[in-house]
Length: 364
Image: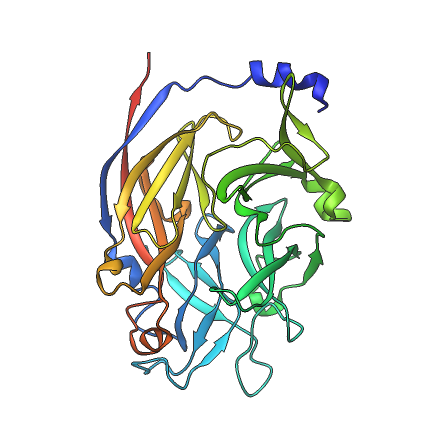
């Protein structure tokens, strides 16, 4: 779409016909037993991205992961790797059975997606289209800032055979050539009409906002690169898809690197948070381009009450776990700036589950 088409695009934006509110939001402790107490040596991980593969099977992609003995009561002496994978199979058990995967080719466990000794990969979002799994990742390297890492690029991990056991996956990692600690497009993904739409974050004048990009599935199958992407931008005549990463439209007035989307009826629901704040919130819209309504307060993370050094992030819904059309099952990551506490407290650094029930009201 060119800028000449912009006014037409804005006129075609759907008007919101439904309002949402939170009916309830409660911890879902039964689902937490999927990952703890320690199973198969999985001692907790950072973040939790899930992608449905079939009606009963989903793949979970984790960031930094502790691997140790299944009988461990603390993480001291365990191995720290940069990413891991799990498959949740609900075909014979309504709750599901989980199998964990990391590289076991050497004496010590290592990251599932390999790194070069300096750079590593964290999957921010992804989707399965036409039998292929597309993971949009941050490429990182060590840094001396508060987080001790920085984003140096965005990457695509393309898995050709995601229905096979992850140990047999054939995948390719491609640097996309854009993205950094101030801007990225790996917050949430949605596939439709031959495109994958990507919500991302953009730090602008000391504030962070949500921005939008898209890329055709055919381009990702053949020669993925920066040139394949278009960006939702604004011009004199309105909003339009642009090949240039300039004058980006603000989808939301806040933005984070890790979140996710869920379809609830005719609505997009986008869960988000403010780093170091206990509140999880959501926005909703009928079109991924907006307009977005919210924020709506969903839940206050109780882990913050443990200590001032505890913080939470990565509020991600998992649609495949929802049993009701108006329900969201989300996870968040609970971490601590006191690394000794992370090593000694197995209540931290596991996916924490919350069951949210929504109430919708027609407008007009």
